[in-house]
Image (cartoon, rainbow, N blue to C red; front, side, top):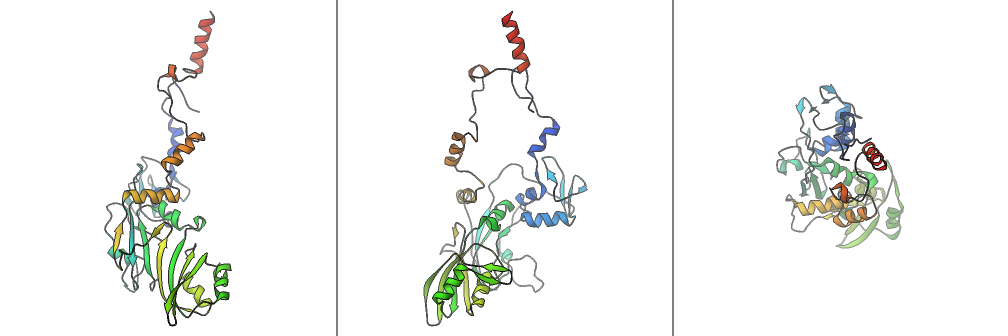
Amino acid sequence: MPRYSYMGRPLKARPEELEDTSEKLHKALATAGMGSRREMEQLIADGRVTLNGQVAKVADRVKQGDLVKVNGKVVRLGWRKQIPRVLIYHKQEGEIVSRDDPEGRPSVFDNLPSVRSGRWISIGRLDFNTEGLLIFTTDGELANHLTHPRYEVEREYAVRLIGALDAAQMNSLLTGVELDDGIAKVDQIVPAGGEGVNQWYHLIIKEGRNREVRRLMEHLGLTVSRLIRVRFGPIAMPSRLKRGMKEELSEEEVEALLRWSGMVKSAAEQRKSEDAGEVKRPESKRPEMAGGKVGHPYRRRLNNKGERQ
């Protein structure tokens, strides 16, 4: 319960009341750019994170002033909200979306600029033989909003097939196909022309399963000769971004992406929330002009008693 002075001003909160300002440890690490939330949960479960000298647990919460270490190194958690960095990259065939590869193949991370604190987190992946749009960010929470299945973010692909889809096959893709890991389907598929046996199609899916597009086509007896991701959520790959090129989004573009993801409210939405009573507008700082009761309830009772006398 909040405490007030005799003038009605709120007093400083007790230490035990500061728990509301804490944050889940794995979320704080993800926001600091250490990786995705799922990766941070696994890191904590593996015992590689300490909180104030003790081995952390997945359910732990962290607040400002706590000492957090990952693999013995201090991690500075950014409590002041900052605009994350977001970068788009045109992945080429023959690159992997991983930092570690026993075969020593080229990695998309080799072509990314360095980050002063944290690291680049890939928003989704692409197969070794697939090219197209990749998005990277320094914010694990944003990566979670764009990749978690419950948000159903659209991925659009341009796929070239050896052969053409007939009406029955297209209907199967739209209604659902049974794969090894469950039923998969496309939300939209549109023919995009082609020459000879090579036919292009644009399709949209809302999942990020491994090799999903290729496995769908293999199930129908068709071979994918080329696969390009051209859009992820609200971000479409610009024509100027050639293979192997990268481009960082401006702060305005990042803020628009955060609003689209539901992480930040627009000014219009903020006003609407205030009008609905979700956020109270600040009243006058002077108690006598606030139009309400002034001072602590005990002080008001004493004043009223004096007036009656």
